[in-house]
Image (cartoon, rainbow, N blue to C red; front, side, top):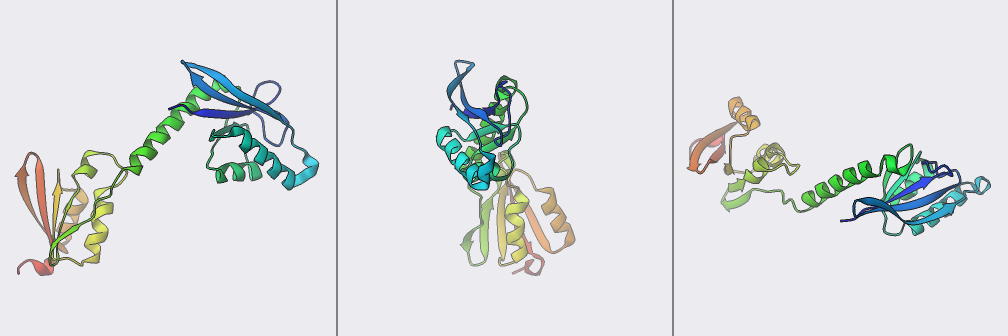
Amino acid sequence: MAFDIAVYIDENGETTSLNDPGKLVVHRKRQGRWKVCREKEFRPVPAEGMSGLRRLMGEVLEFMGGCRVFVGNTVTGIPYFELEKSNCAVWEMQGKPRDFLDYILTREEEEHRREEKSAVVVVPVPEETGAGCYRISIKEIQENNIGVTSKQVLLPFLRQGNFYELKVLCNHIPPWLEAEFLTGKLCGEVNNIGSGELEIIITKSCCKSR
């Protein structure tokens, strides 16, 4: 997908502060080269104070349109607040656009991919299979880096203690879980069910026998 990047520059073509007169230039990469989509000059009026700066930012955001990446030399105070409020990614960079556009594009695309991946992640929860008996699979967590650990998924449930038995389908025994077994507060029975899969049957120490 294409990312538009808006850069606020001075008369020398280098990034500058939104508190100073400058030109906002929206760039997009087409056929391997950066092209200017549109540009507009802005002249802040210091005498207008905060209200003038807010008005200026309204004009800036309106000109940016769907572009949600802003680059300036320094972005603080009201400009930063207004950009953040509009869900814009804010970058502080020095120099001319050609010095950093590719870098920002790469970083923004990486962040976008991470957000897309996390949006489809479904965190597993123990499913009740009978009175006090539960089952859960943590295979996906162990096989893929989805931003959630087996400890984050299992430990809160185990700490609550509202279960008799929990069967965990996994690829390997999490080291932290082995440590829990060593404390004696939990008991674990491991069954190899084939194809590199394990089933760990977890019970509380007081429930070792029915």
